[in-house]
Image (tube, rainbow, N blue to C red; front, side, top):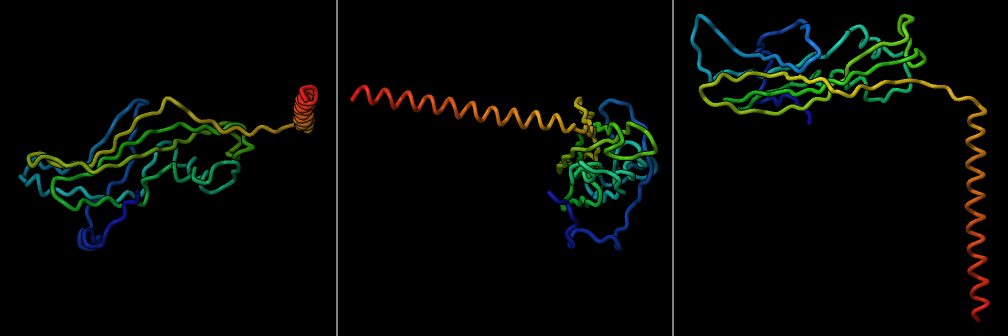
Length: 205
């Protein structure tokens, strides 16, 4: 599903909003962070709170490693791999009614590149990036509760590793000869079965 701002509901010039920039150090455990309107000195109507937002960039891990992936120097990686590093980027999440907010649920998958034939990074043999499998839903709140934009993440117990292994010519030749030998064996068995079946019919006649 693509979340793009419909023009009747969103105008960045009239409603510039707040810009949040930064990074958060997190543990290797499930967690979340919230964006919510709060004021300790003033009262405001909870049902009028609007937490519509644009995600310019959201990712996990070393930003330098991600930039090196995006800038190329790699082969053998799926074409949509780069997009999975920050799938929320460029999306606009706008609520069209009251008491609503978007919740983002993300599964973080560790991905390692081994042996720099796949990607050349500063002479290191292993570099790690994090892919995000995201799911976004629109939630409705009670009138007495202030809506909040939620970013919830969980670490996947399964990790991925990309490894390029070269194959020797004699391994390829051995495999090819094995396939050819198997074909001859199957053809011989079929021929024997057909011959035996034909002799049986002749004896019966």
